[in-house]
Amino acid sequence: MNMASLTAPKHYSLPTFLRPQSPKYPSHYPLLSTSSASQFCGLKLSFSTPNANAASPLLLPSVFAKVSKGSKPPPFTLKDQDGKTVSLSKFKGKPVVVYFYPADETPGCTKQACAFRDSYEKFKKAGAEVVGISGDDPSSHKAFATKYRLPFTLLSDEGNKVRKQWGVPGDFFGALPGRETYVLDKNGVVQLVYNNQFQPEKHIDETLKLLQG
Image 1: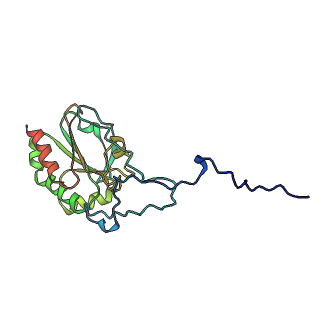
Image 2 (image 1 turned 180 degrees about the horizontal axis):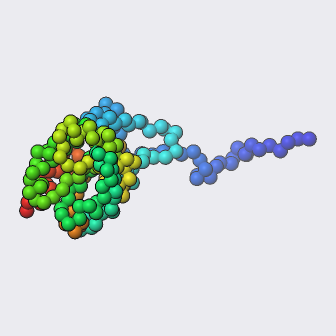
Image 3 (image 1 turned 90 degrees about the horizontal axis):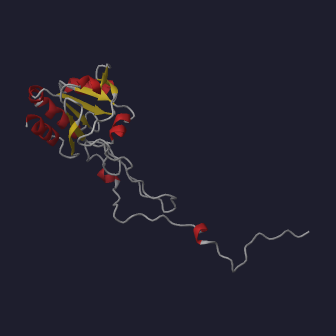
């Protein structure tokens, strides 16, 4: 008994939507090579060249700023460098500077932390608290704060849950955690959002300008 042939006739062609497609990448998104590693705040970044047979295009960042001037940010409760839980509500009734930074012990983040330290008396005079947040664990924060004699609170946002809730934008398509500072007034309302990855010390200038003004 002859088996029916499953081969399509020569004149038959697959519909357009079933034909294999090569992914197209937007020409306006340049690819970064691995040689650019370690140039951004001391964090090692790695980028891979897209596979020609890949089924999906480059992933673009999906997190955008949710907390803006005039809004109240989502509450949080995190552990500080001493392992104690600290809630945002603790600071209600006084201005508070909340700054998100990429990681402990990286060059840019160390400069920023030391700049906040050197101006800490000015923040106290303005009646403001300073709180730094990154994804490092409490023991890393403890070592960082001790080494550089940081007089303010560092909170551990392991898993970057709060960073995502606040919508802190990343850099380089999300490969580098963003560096963003918020100033909340005594009622918990955001009065300033400042983002500057590569000039970490400018965050101190901008926040003091608002608090002292």
